[in-house]
Length: 303
Image (cartoon, rainbow, N blue to C red):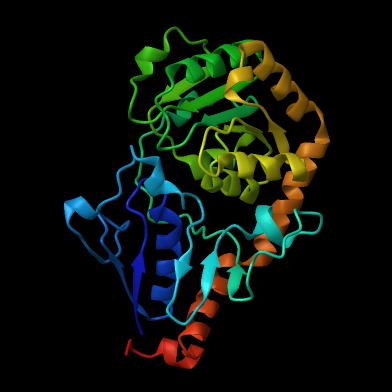
């Protein structure tokens, strides 16, 4: 079977769908990304430059974080299952039609750019990983506040990923327990992280939960307030806002998440749920079922 993926051409959108595409490729389907500027090593067909989404136009990014894949036969897949829908006590809703399937996160740890990171600088102290995402990451004041908040914790170590819009030197003097980089190997770092400071972007939150890491969420825009509301509801972390963010306030929030086992226990519960959900396999099964492809046919050469 030949399968075409159409995904918004923005940083942060493509990665989850490439994981699903790789999973389908492993089942011997031919996959290609359409109107893409790249697909993490998978086949792609570039589109006209004018058709690319403009990250400076928020109205083009309303679907950010949903990472939905639609098929003509009426099936919609979304990787938001664990924090948004499937577990008891989440927000009740009758909105979703029966053809909408919450499958689970699309993570396989592949297809990411290899980054140079100073692993030798990690001290073994409890690690705080902070990232404000890949799109809205130019707020030097926010990054300075995060650094100042961590400076109050001499027994912790901070890794702060600031993105490509700023130079680490713009953050100013930083304490010895802080590592400031433009981009960080997020998945690998989360495996060693005690708390994740995040903008509540869906990908970062799901990747944190997949490692059982609680969060301090500072939502900015788009779907982030909704994701942050689920963090608060599930008590996998605490939530604040940009207008309340000070070094002292952030320090208190870190103390709360680090010292109250409720947050880590709940993050671990969702970590187990993510494993049980097996999102990639479920999503691939649904793709095949929607297109009338049996597993045996999928294993044959793509028709």
